[in-house]
Length: 344
Ligand code: ASP
Image 1 (cartoon, rainbow, N blue to C red):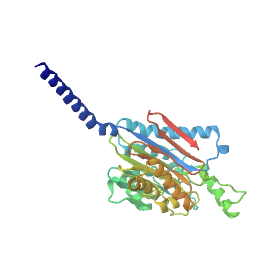
Image 2: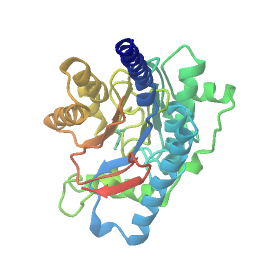
Image 3: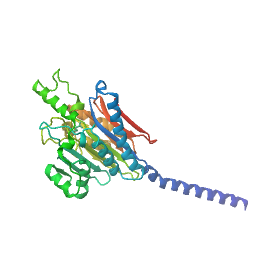
Image 4: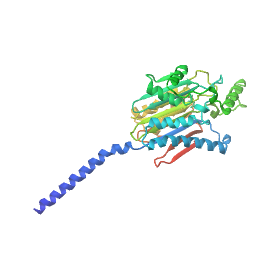
C-alpha cells in the first residue's frame, strides 16, 4: 500500500512538472515578442572633429536624443514600430541640423526637393514620396501614401495634391531655407568653377553635401518597421531622386528578417538594392544581422559608394555599420539606456 502511495506521489510530481514546462514553452514566443528596440541615424559622412564646435556637437546629440525619446516612448507604451519610426523621423525632420525636412539641402537650382519612405515589416506594405517641395514632414506623407492610396510612390505635384486633399501640412518654400545649407551650395558651385569639388582649394566635406535621417524599430508585437527621409545631395540636378524613397534601396522591413534604413551616396545604394540586400542575405544565406549589414555595405563600397545603414532584426539585435569617418546615430540598449554616437 505504502509503495503505491509513493508511486502515486511521483506520478503527480511528474505530471505537474510536465505541465509547468509546457506552460513555460507556451509563454516563450510571447516573452520574445515583448522585446522592443529602436535605432536612428542622422546621416553618414566626413564628419570632421576640427569643424565640430562643442555647441554644435551638443545640438546634434540633443537632436538625436529627442528623436530616440519620441520613438521609444511609443514603443514602451506598447505602440507600433510604424508609429515609433515615424515619430523619430519627424523629430529629425524638424531639426535644422539634419538634412531632411527643415534642414534639407539645396538643388543646383537653389530649390529643396525632399524624398521619404516608410515600410511595415508585418504586411510588407510601403509608402514613399519623391521630390516634394512644400511638405513640412515628408515622412507623414509617405505613411499616408502607404495607408490611403493604392500606390507605393508618389512624386512632385501629384504627391503634394494628395497631401493637400488629406490635410497634410504644406509650407512655403522659405520654411526650408537655412543659411548653412545655402552656403554649402554656394561653396560647391564656386568649387565647380575651379575644377570640381576635389580641387585642393575647395575641400567640400560630405557633411556639406548630403545626409539623411532614418529610424528602424521592433515593437512588442514583434513587428518591424523602417522609415527614412532626406533632402538628398547638395547641388543635385532638379528631379534627381536618391535611394531614400526607393523601397529595397534606402528603406526595407520584413518581420521574417530585419528593418533597414540607409544613408550615403544614393546612386550606389540603389544599384545594390542595399536595404533589401541585408534582408536577403539573412533570409537566403542564413547570415546574422551584423554580417548581412556589413556585406551589403561592402557591396556599396565596391561600386564606389560611401555611407552607412542602421538595422534591427526580429530578435532586437542591432547593427549600425558605416564606411565614412562618422555617422550621427543612436539606439536604445537592452537596459533602456540611450546610446548616441557621432564618430567611429
Ligand atoms: N542617401 C541620400 C541620397 O542619396 C543622401 C544621404 O544619405 O546622404 O539622397
